[in-house]
Image (cartoon, rainbow, N blue to C red):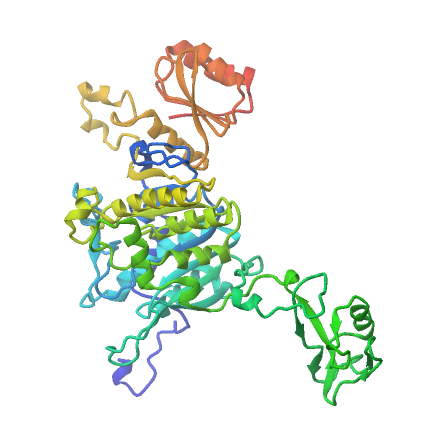
Length: 583
């Protein structure tokens, strides 16, 4: 009506806002609980030293819907991730995105989204002909970023790669989620090393990397290493024992209080004053101290205008530029070569849009320090994992990664890749991490964590018990004797307990035998869990004597009613502060 009317059509609610269809439902989606869990798969895991099947690595790889994975991790890793880097679908019209369709009924959604489909067809192509082209993309990205913010430490940072298709919308989404005040920069990444002459208009030479802090007042950006070219500018013409230096200005523009005085050369006695409209950048006492410390240079003959010595040994690194040049951050051709080096048997890399290792590696240099956790929940071909392994080996620092990648995205048809067992992007990512770790270890022999623990998003370990009493026949009651699904292992239950109790998935896990029963010890007896059946009082007493913070058993673990009845009293006697939990 406004388009064809000469008067203002006012609904009384006009205000500045960024919205789209189903935005409110997208907000709800971030908070909706799920009945799922993570299952550790040892055969796909790699040990810290690169041994296949090892589960002592502190790096985490999760296969599954990243929204589900973020929800499962949110309690455990709340405020523990220093840096998030993601390279989400750019919404170019050819991308596949997660289909979080809020307009369907729950049953239709489950069937259509792949939650109940054995083929697992969860991802859908978002073409430009789709009437909800931008809406679907925003509904996909919004809840994931809402959850992502809570993972960051108070001094944490998120970097998001994006191009011109959605950069404006993504800026508005991030302003809302992270706060406009926490915007750090919209970086420009030079993705190609030479202009494309076949371009119709301008050669599209760069993409964007949005940078937001969790709390801008706590955020600090590291410096980049100095280049040889920068260091070459430093000399030592007077053989100063402090080493190479270069001259810096002692005179500044404008007039200032105590900035106009006479400086005497200690070598020749020549007097120097500042020109009109200028000032000495140091107060008289400070200048006198610098001269006495041989930090002011008057030239070889002592008659030159004084300059301050800037010693190379006292210089820090170099400040990062908002223009990410390919010399420091790599380019798309380099990204393909990174993969080609690891897969020489493949004529064509079956992943069209990898990011260069140098990009994520350099961002990690800027945003993280020793021991920090880096998360990437649009992992793709696992560039982030290789970047962290490479950075750790180079700087001898123990950074850890958490990667999430859907197991449903198929690679481009490639027979040679299939011979390697690679059918999905997740398969490619896992093989890449293994090969990258092996290559780095052979080349550097660095003492770092080369592995990862592999987890898969799966349905809950607990049986569905949503049945009306009239629907349950007497003969079928036996199926409820155990509330845990038959195909679930004690290890599955342990991971669920760790998630429920907020214990890091990277924690040390050992198995002990106590009174003939298998007991899991997590983080040096912080958690003790026994899921065996026929647990006797002897086992319970020995576990209680170890005084764990948490003790967990199965609902039907106890050998008899007497043990079950005495369970609480045993802990009250030996370890009253232990938190007890029964599955």
